[in-house]
Image (tube, rainbow, N blue to C red; front, side):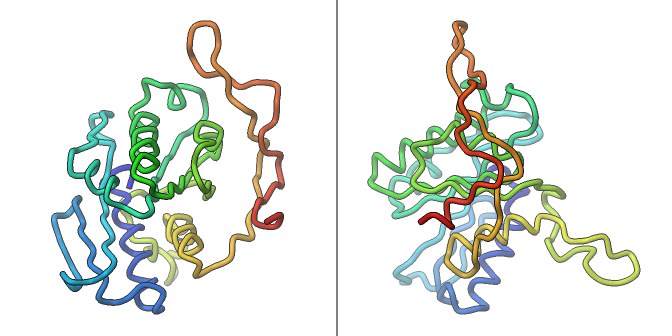
Length: 213
């Protein structure tokens, strides 16, 4: 997770995957955000849920426990969410620092690294070393059950439906039919050491790597 509030849609997605038989119902899930542990303690597979960013303080909270979990993992899925502008893409951004460290530790341990970009997909340009990049746009309603406000007279659509949908696709339980809604330019360092957009387009609008593999 990026923040503790991402635990809600992530847990919802895992519960869906278990209900559908994609993940074993007895899989051990260690949730470092809530402190809960579920599943069979002798299960072959372990899923660890943790966060690296405190949305209230705006600070990095990358713990030793998170680091150890990544170094013991076979695969790591890291959520990243950035908005318009360049500030959150810079090296001093706690979000970039968290994802960069997770990517580095995962690869040092021989694990696969999946970047789940769950807002504007421009952060895909920062993490070209990722083994897989999945873009799920326009996150909203952090901490709200994705099924909230989907029935009754006040129906206005689901919150955070993009995160469970992306996780289902990563686990192979759903297709990825989406295409990029914008061009994503490559990033380069300016003379002052800050990241800026270059004139080169890294991914064009309408691009979908899935259709080309």
